[in-house]
Length: 205
Image (cartoon, rainbow, N blue to C red; front, side):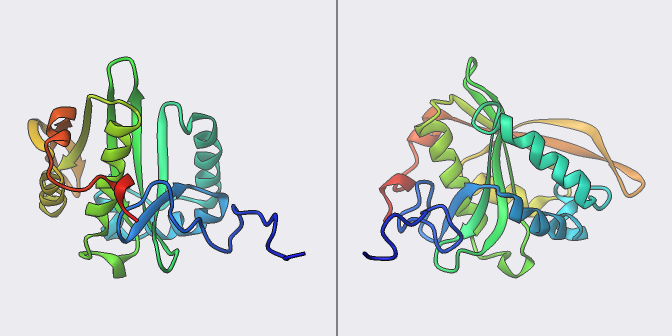
């Protein structure tokens, strides 16, 4: 008998050849307990944490509690994923739709690339396209929105690239390093997503 017959495809060996939520170079998978160590390392990085409104390092216990709290909400009020590189299967960050409101068809998007060596490679853009295709193409959302700090111009350019539009500004909404900063609200509607001239991620190999 072939030793691989009946093997657990959810093991650590490798994911399916064509992950369900995929771009050309990345795929999204649910968070597992083994990811907690990577999450802690990312959140302890000052440059990563600033874009996430992270004021102090998290403890392992706090991250464990967050993970346990996430499980019953996954697929309900939140869809939280780990961003992985398709060839190396390396986790490099996270992406999520949270505050999911299926009655009004809305959700808030959050994303972070935790591995500094993978910054400026376009992986965040690809992961956001996967998440938008999932939200509009599978969850039947009408609007996806996000919040971004005024000092994070780099992130705003990425959001604009994938179709988000500035909708408003909350003035002096966030206190950081001794002064207040504005927080921008950006959003994308279903019709705007549908008009984008690009292959949908479910069409990719």
